[in-house]
Length: 169
Image (tube, helix red, strand yellow):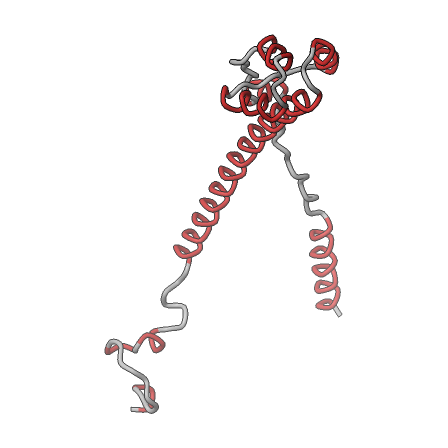
């Protein structure tokens, strides 16, 4: 009777210890601060000025020619909606203004995506390094003689076991 009560109390203690485990930690998200974001996104640089684009528009050049000139000059423009309206009223075509907005947004998205990819690659490398360290620690703790000396060939060195063997001599 005494053995049953000790066994029962040990069982209760073990189950309570399992219930008292730590809750899972929430996933930490590495956020980009506004200052970091401003540093990541390349500033808009206009090598071809907006006034020059107005002149090109008034000369009768098509939207495709003006967009090609913007691409060739490697210019980017950071325009607010009110700026876009003002430049539209000065003579820049709507298609050209749309291209300017889309090109700037795409450059910002690419800069952010590059940073995310860089962080993800660093995280994956750190995870791989931790897995390697874990595997090395596991290998260090392995006992090569776990199966006993007979498993590795017995006291006379390794030899194939084709039946019989040293156990039966």
